[in-house]
Image 1 (cartoon, helix red, strand yellow):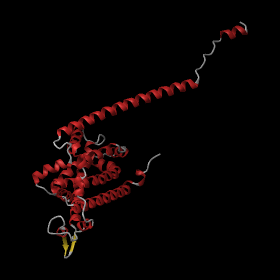
Image 2 (image 1 turned 135 degrees about the horizontal axis):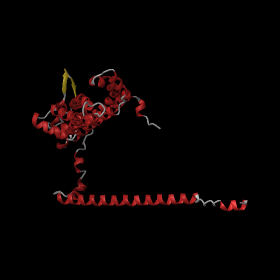
Image 3 (image 1 turned 90 degrees about the vertical axis):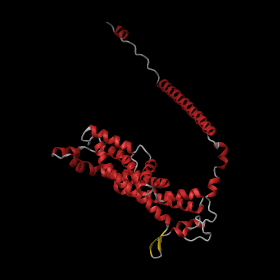
Image 4 (image 1 turned 60 degrees about the vertical axis):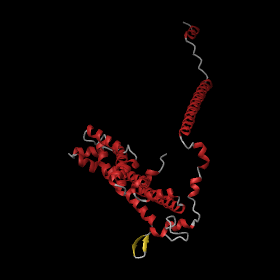
Length: 329
């Protein structure tokens, strides 16, 4: 066989497609996919908008007051709550006698003083705010105490048995299924109005909410320490106490402080249905059109919530560590 014959038997190499052609094809497919998704998105938004307009029209026709006809009067109610004398806002906040007081309830700021010793007094709204904060603190403590054992019973890696785990999860789901204001209304009808019904309502909801957060933390815990406790013959309580709690407690405390912020707001809302605290006074002030008192209450509530948020955020950073709040790159 000659060299020429050998060259003829070698199969010729297939031409490779150009790289530019592949890139162009990929880009074209990608543009088609993006265009298709945009069409689907616009179509979905159009359907939602049409459904929204249809529901609004139905609601407007069903409403005796006709929402759209009354819409220009939306800010009439707010105009009633604008104080005529803005100095009365500070007088209402600190229970200072107002020159506008003519014997009615709108400007009787000094009558709300809570005397502690002699002529020393706590302003009425500060005392009500303290009551609201106490409701939130007590509810958070009670919720924390009951949520910790429930979380270990519900966690897959620490629950003694699967039936107990299912029961614990269902209990927590039931407790957080109803809003606090609904539970507070129920207990207010049974126990009469006051802080006790508010504490029970917020505590029950807190148990369910914190329990879910806690058992998710427990399920993500490192099990090496638990294996060590098993190896030395530790029982279930010893495993929870010495293997799990030391590593999950910082997160437990962080979630509890976060829940405290939520409970301050919830306690304020519950006050409107007879739960005591500042919420009840705020409801009465708004319903009667007392502008200075309403603005003073809103101002105090806003400052308190901001202060609680900042304090709990600072305390969480101290407990968990600054590294937990930094973005990981």
